[in-house]
Image (cartoon, rainbow, N blue to C red; front, side, top):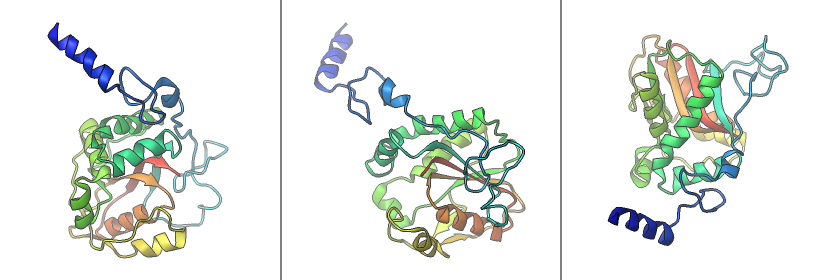
Length: 234
């Protein structure tokens, strides 16, 4: 009874608020209205850039058909718009690391709905932060998502496969060509990956320069197929 009394007082003094619109809620992280705004990326989509496709029988859009990429498939769970903008900003920059559970569940839900088969993959890894940035932030948000996907799919997770060798300016507001130059040569893989198929996890796919640089480093060390999975796509 005393515990219930304390819970009532706590709810009065510190009500739970939706992390997007700040409306009072009784549980979870979002109000029902905001949660319904989460947009999952419907299929079919181009395997490289995620542009929508008109028919299921093709896997690449015309723009990507004659291009080569260091990864074999890209999967993003949600569109990068509210409420995902607010959630990812809090998760990434405001120490809301506990959101990893909810956000990884969105990825898992999407993978289930598109019939993703995890059985062929031998490792899960994530886009790394530079050690100085990791020290400041205290955690790698993509690493947290990777660990939870690893636990769910029972695929080994390794956070030391890829090394970020050069702290760089933020990618957030850079155009595509500067993003590509910004990531050139900064990721290093030191072990032979023996043709292992790998899932590479990141939080947001924008131009693809970061995941492409990581995938290229993996392929240089004999990785098999590399599938990129991100929480959101801009």
